[in-house]
Image (cartoon, rainbow, N blue to C red; front, side):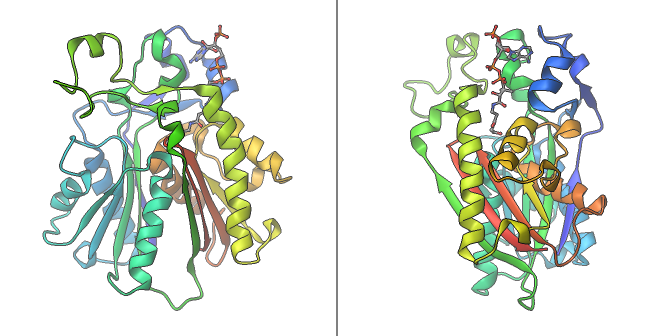
Length: 325
Ligand code: UT7
């Protein structure tokens, strides 16, 4: 029904990163397609960005915030270990009593959340679901040379949508969710972890940087390029649709080279795959709603367009959704 966004004002360019790590702006641009990202510059939680995005989504949907009857929030960078960031968001929106569900599926969090919201709306349990992807990565990155491969990728931001029942002519056609936990340690933050005894985190762990995100870069890259085309074809095949029926593919913004490789594999022009990674970096759960917001603003997404959302990320998890926008 409506989409909203929130980005911190501070712009961090590739050049800016060189003050903390040995890198160069051209390497980052060439290997990732990223020129800049937004990072917070004061205390601010994922729920703060989410609240701004949520209010804008409601406004654009023509729905009062007070009409929202369910919150689904996807994040891998929660405000606190518990309770869920959805609860902090609910308090900020002053919506006591309605459910607040947190989704922990990283880059696929938005599509996983969409699947849940769609099912609840279809079965009539809720009528105005607020679905948000919100992330603060910047305060959790190893910005030294040790962590430069991962740190150059991620940005902060939030995107939100309001979903409700329609007349059947527009909306979610199908969602397709996958995971393969054998690869859980290929992209993860190890500590703090409840599996460590007697303490979840020690000074030694912190010295070793085990609280920073780590990625087996090539393994993640290769799996993304395999799984994203696969799930796009699965999603279209489910409704006897073809690649030619799709007005716009909206991929999770992980790396421009991944997006281009996916387009190539499907024999499609990369122009048909929306991209705003150059200006925002990878915002994990927020990246698809932020892309929807920008695509709509740029006139690339219009009412009744057939759209495919697709993601791949930590877990591994991957997913696709087919929508009539
Ligand atoms: O959103 C979740 C899903 N995430 C993804 O799908 C991301 C998947 N992976 C990637 O996007 C890419 O693998 C990266 C962008 C993370 C890395 O690019 P790459 O082309 O795979 O580089 P690499 O890891 O193979 O590293 C190549 C070289 C290494 O140097 P040596 O060992 O060849 O001397 C790295 O140390 O590039 C070096 N390097 C850097 N150099 C300058 C790694 N990061 C940087 C950096 N600046 N920021």
